[in-house]
Length: 322
Image (cartoon, rainbow, N blue to C red):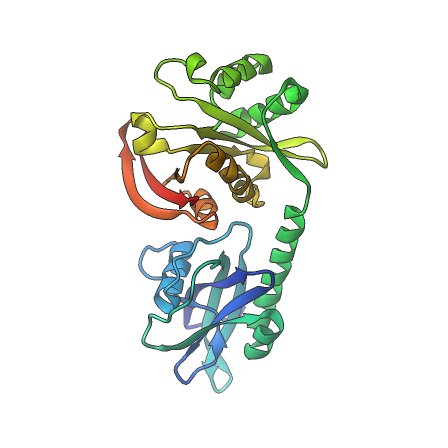
């Protein structure tokens, strides 16, 4: 095995914008070539933290990194044919919809969006073109998945078996089951549906709770419940400070497929119909998937609060529906 004098690790991202036609963000250093935002891992940073920091520093974009995509570029550098340094760059993927790149780093001369063919021509190294091809294939696969027919509906006994399968998936693999009410403790679906019905109206809502509307998110091709989401019609003290208007969960076996983003998007018009003009959604600090779901639906970060009972920090985001 070839021995190298040193090993260098960097992280970056393929940043894209989906405006009907996918465009990819490339940056160019002064006097340099077009490439993806990337940089060296610093200190105790995770790979994701490095990628997000470099994107922010080089383009001014504060993005979340998508799950499910990871690609690497590896090469050796040396003098007179002797490879002295082995370099590895780990790439993630991120969406910048609604954001405009503005170079922040003094070394960055330009940050521009290219369509796929133009980006392929702008990238001079075959290894980077291969990364772009993998990103394009990943996004095409995600788009195909999103075209699968889905429906957001109130729970009913018609989905008795599927509701209990959803519950067992959480009991087996773990998870907080946010937005599911008391489903965790109901092995009889009718008992849960009775609770859901009672919570629809103020006059039948138990003291200490607020009226809520419950939905299940069903994939029509196999009638599987992939997610559950709940709208709280207004706040009590706990919801106003911590949990917000919406709680949701995606089945552990169906995560990292974009279902949470689409489920939240579909429920926002129902919030508007209830008269909610500004929707508060919170997520546990460090939950990158949930954070990305909220940002993809227009969430704007407000603050982070500490929930002592669970020893958790919660990030609060507002989605303006007006």
